Amino acid sequence: MNVDWGESRMPNMTLEKVKMPEQDPNIRNKNFLEVTLGYTEEQAIEEAKRCLNCKNKPCVQGCPVNVNIPDFIQLVSEGKFEEAYQKVKQTNSLPAICGRVCPQESQCEHFCVRAKKGESVAIGRLERYVADKYMSDIALKPEKQQTNNKKVAVIGSGPAGLTCAGDLAKMGYEVTVFEAFHAPGGVLMYGIPEFRLPKALVQKEIDMLKFLGVDIKTNMVIGKVFSLDELFQQGYEAIFVGTGAGLPSFLGIPGENLNGVYSANEFLTRVNLMKAYKFPDCDTPVRVGKSVAVVGGGNVAMDAARCAKRLGAEKVYIIYRRSETEMPARIEEVHHAREEGIIFKLLTNPTRIVGTEDGWVKGIECTEMELGEPDSSGRRRPVAKPGSEHIVDVETVVIAIGQSPNPLIKSTTPDLETQKWGGIIADEETGATSIPGVYAGGDTVTGAATVILAMGAGKKAAKAIDEYIKGKSK
Image (cartoon, rainbow, N blue to C red; front, side, top):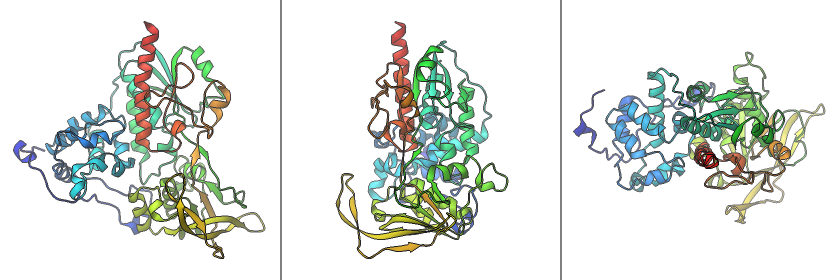
């Protein structure tokens, strides 16, 4: 598309973002197709013209991987989509993914000058557009860099590991990624549902890393198959640990061992990675019944609830002990869940899961809550209302109250220092751990966080690993 240069420089001062087309809620809650349909070329250019191309670029400071946002958006406004994609790729290895799942509203878009009077520029939607267009228009082909004959191991193929591996491969390192599951992608594959993040798109991003020369080995549980010491003995000069936070947390209430109780990790892994939504053509189905309770208020809880609805549950409840104001889920995810018919039982705390005589879930006992004084997190502490106990009839319960790092690597690496809750202690700027040559980043360090923060940690670690290996060679 030919765009007049003079016309492209005229800002669009509309106060609202260009609306992105979506599936109708009453249709999409019965399928796993992507909810948001993406911009057209005309919509992308129109939205890009809302950017003022600020001299001090405040949006960039809100991006954990420092994408040069005004420059790529200017290129979009000129119809130069491939150049815009390449501008994003200079610092972001997974733009099609970030454009969909990053919480832009609390990061780059939060700092956008346009948000002072109206809505911010739709940075995430534009990032998604240029990535999708590039990957649909351009045939992927090998781009293997000239090797420096230095080997680096990356443990985990989630966003932190993939970013670290991609950056190191571009520097010429021979990178091997060790993934515990049978498919790479980490939380991008097993945790985030198809309707938010299509798996074919994730696979394309992974294929692009393979074209850089990254070797990905699946079914490799490090700590069992090899220890970190054994990887060093095999010639790896540095190791990055990006194993995420896959150990689920539970409520510790009676009835959690009943049939029909899932951790969100298991539930979403069955649905996403094992393709339960394609039943009966899947490896491992998941039973939901007519009614489901999802306990928690984060993005994982929203994902589990929306999956349960699509799997055929007539009633799906989000049970959360605080109010919506304290809910950590993205506003967009809460909005989509409500549109799709998810029932929110806020200021409600589960106390017991009720079972049948043969050991299946038949209900969840709850207490109504009210908010008291703030706790250590700064959120008002929920306090039970006496005499408000009641039972919600459900056949399935999904616990989505958080997760922590798997202790396997720590248990086989005694010199690796960790926090009391299990997270690896690593330098915030470099990812360096207590063991020379071992770096870590993402959820295994911070606990469950966002995709883009994990990517930022992988990027910092790649830079530090390069400096470490070059320092050894002097």
